[in-house]
Image 1 (tube, rainbow, N blue to C red):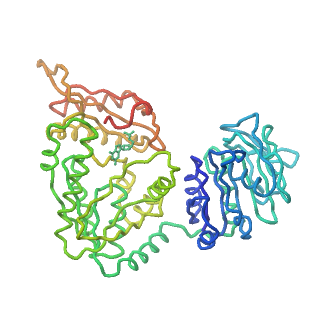
Image 2: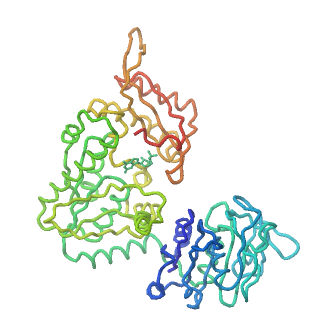
Image 3: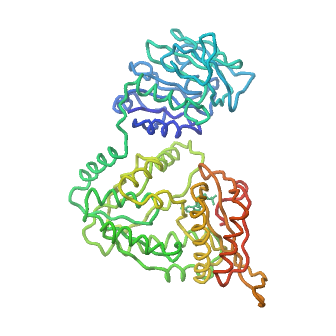
Amino acid sequence: RILILDFGSQYTQLIARRIREAGVYCELRNPEMSEAEIRAFNPRGIILSGGPDSTIGDAAPSAPQCVFELGLPVLGICYGMQTMAQQLGGQVESSAHREFGYARIRARGHSELLREIEDHTTTEGWGMLDVWMSHGDRVASLPEGFKVIASTDSAPIAGMANESRRFYGVQFHPEVTHTTQGQRMIERFLIDICGCETLWTSANIIEDSIAAIREQVGDDEVLLGLSGGVDSSVVAALLHKAIGDQLTCVFVDNGLLRQNEGDQVMAMFAKHMGIRVIRADAEDRFLNALEGIDDPEQKRKIIGNKFVDIFDEEAAKLKNVKWLAQGTIYPDVIESAAAKTGKAHVIKTHHNVGGLPEHMKLKLVEPLRELFKDEVRKLGVELGLPSDMVYRHPFPGPGLGVRILGEVKKEFADLLRKADQIFIAELRKHDLYDKTSQAFAVFLPVKSVGVMGDGRRYDYVVSLRAVETIDFMTARWANLPYDFLDLVSRRIINETAGISRVVYDISGKPPATIEWE
Ligand code: XMP
């Protein structure tokens, strides 16, 4: 296993994902970790991440000095290289040439880290690498025992190594895909330099999780809130495999789900997989609670609270449950750890089940706590969940409640479900679903005039929304073909009595958000 000390770069999670992709387990930790904690973690190697700080500043964070005294390989990336240089007696200065983005660097082929890794060859014993740079400061003089292994005009020391101690530093970011040989460099460090074995595979993760779950819960019964989303679905499949009938799921149908979604969840989990799922049909209770409410945040609150109420009621009917399973994944864990240390940049409120009745006193089982989303998806497929379910676009907790602008009514939800289903089905049919990150229809409670046959229509409007994004923090509207939009629009208007106009949303995020509310 590899330890990554996180100095707060926006790319740190990417480092972890690249390492996991290479088949090696790793964790992200705070650089304030103590020597005892590092020893207990027992890593094969340590990576120091990039970060927004300057090592020149007074309050600059550094790595625990013991990192350089444990005899372990260390790789410093960007800020991590700079702090390594400074802590070992080299010097860092701020550079007149800040470098951001693509760069071509010269790399020494005789370094263990970069040996035989290059994009282009030169004659003088250097290889050329296409890399992604993002830095202001640079290393100005090497610590003792180090040599230069990579270089650019504005950063003569863009890479450094002390081969005998197995310390490496690179100013560029091997973890981003723009560094074309990045994954090879990371694998070189993990496998050849640290001697890690590539055992972190879906099959092994499942096997280990099953053993861990059995050990944790013993013969006790476990309760899971199943939403039909990827995370809770994978938890259901995994727990079922581990403990079979000791698992009971509660599925709350709030009337704000997509077309046939409730039936699909029941068919897949209850019928097909033989999991015990209690379905709470609560459409009326949700819609009654939402009557007359048009403020989006208030709608979110009402939906969230009602969900907890109904889940609690169902849970209270079960007598012997001792554990509550949750689909917490690693980014949630990292975010809440970052929130505690005050280093978080963005915090999303998660729709976790919060307020179980006091007397139930359930303990938590969270089998996906160590996994990234892409790992969860692979696990889902390995566990036999259909891949079109596992690779589905995200769907917000409040569901159609935030896709019907203003007051939510059953009539509106029914119209929206039909339009949305047509849009999604056509996206899939035209091979466009996987090319967009999230797509859906939005119901606009305004009427516009139309004409159909000889008759006048005065009906509602639906907007189609489709975006491309990596992290959902920023997004571009998807450039769907006009012919495709034309087809979807015609189908929706012809097949959905009550909708007479379809528009396409061409707003980016920022300034617009992905959802309309
Ligand atoms: P926005 O609209 O903020 O959406 O650009 C970013 C991503 O978050 C999802 N989203 C939510 N998910 N509860 C959720 O579980 C919510 O209240 C919520 N609001 C937005 C949205 O679908 C998109 O993927």
